[in-house]
Image (cartoon, rainbow, N blue to C red):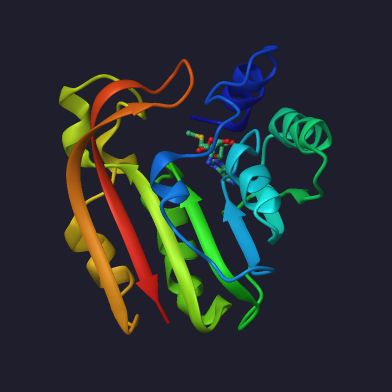
Length: 197
Ligand SMILES: C[S@@+](CC[C@H](N)C(=O)[O-])C[C@H]1O[C@@H](n2cnc3c(N)ncnc32)[C@H](O)[C@@H]1O
């Protein structure tokens, strides 16, 4: 899936993953006014939700169409977000800067995960939280969303190794109903990660 793919998808009038935030993210709590970074945030549904909760949110995505829709959604909801159009394959995350880093359905080839994941621990302030949900490798059999490419799906062992420095880390693979927009359409295998620095 390349940038053009995402631009085409986000060029439609509707929001591909809806305007409501991800179910797993909605269960998390952050202290008011947290500085939150959302990576691969698409049309901004999670970033806007977090801004509505009173957080200072920066989101990154490489699709200009996604960024436009995110800014539009923020205006619609009367909140401010900092939406940056950048390619994560070369992005350097600011160190000790974030109270939370959120990655929801951020599916990349392994070389991008290898570039990003080692930066996340350093990028968080002490006590900062990582929240990640994405489709697991088992998702291939469900065909209810996500890339149909094993390399872009997640595995617990890889995530435990990538985030081994966290003082508390929970990683769970589970089957749940994901109804989040027209491309996430039913029973799915997901991995949910929560880490505290
Ligand atoms: C399935 S969408 C998830 C969007 C959003 N997090 C959500 O849950 O609604 C995956 C997103 O990853 C973005 N993405 C993929 N590769 C990227 C890269 N190298 N740099 C920045 N964004 C990327 C795509 O543009 C797309 O918006």
